[in-house]
Length: 369
Image (cartoon, rainbow, N blue to C red):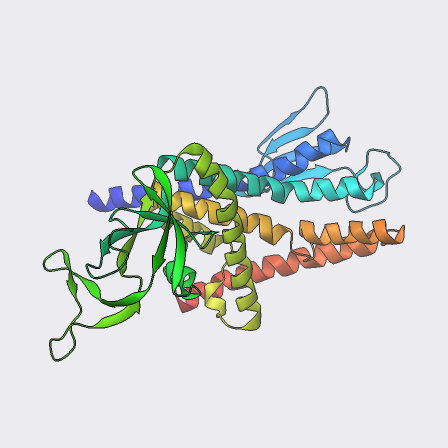
């Protein structure tokens, strides 16, 4: 009975993960749809999922077919004549290049807006994960300035964002003998300046639940040239307007992390086992869903930002590649032949699918799911 309950629970987490991923894809495609409608493009069909249609309905006013398909890992907004010639003035390829650029960019833009909204809600109702002071060294010159419970919002004017375990250390790695902090204390933002000094170092003692001085092999206290405090990473609620403002920096921080990881993957600094396709994505989201709403929400933000970034990459079949062709036409006043562009996108599509399958299989064989 317990095994059955566990299986049902896992199935539920998988369903939540797939539903969340599908929602982000639909948001992306809706961005294309809305921009296309506003700019007068002829839209043939808006579909959720892929595979043969299990439900179809045609709009009476606009003639757009709305369909639901059985495999919930995709979706599309199909415009008239995206990859072939057509004389209709509202066909995709007959619209001005700048209009096509807006439509193509709108999908990624909507994903980015979705990430901003989710981040703002997380920061407001759950809290932003921030370094929070739990101990100030007794002989530190900052003992009367920094208080236990202070959450560090920024370091030398740069917003504190935490995604990886070492982000806090990186934020302090470039500071000098003094540092300006913005901290959240009793719900209010305060500016303080800290200075370094030779202080006795303290570490957390799990047995007593307190912070005790570090001792060397002779039992003498160890000193270091530090600001003199210990922190833990802990979620801190902030008001809506602060959350909204901080969501922008955090979103760009996520984008930077994604681009850095992509660059390390290309240069071989990280192995292929760290990449993955849709199966890996669903597996990670399932694990996040089972870890609680807050973790799941952060993962949704990361994947939403990832969808935005990846779709703007100039890779064949992606929006970024189509934008490159629009720019070529705009600059040189002459489009690339549609059969050539279509062949490039089709080849790129199969390459991307092949890479996604390979990445999933490679990850499963090397590290599992």
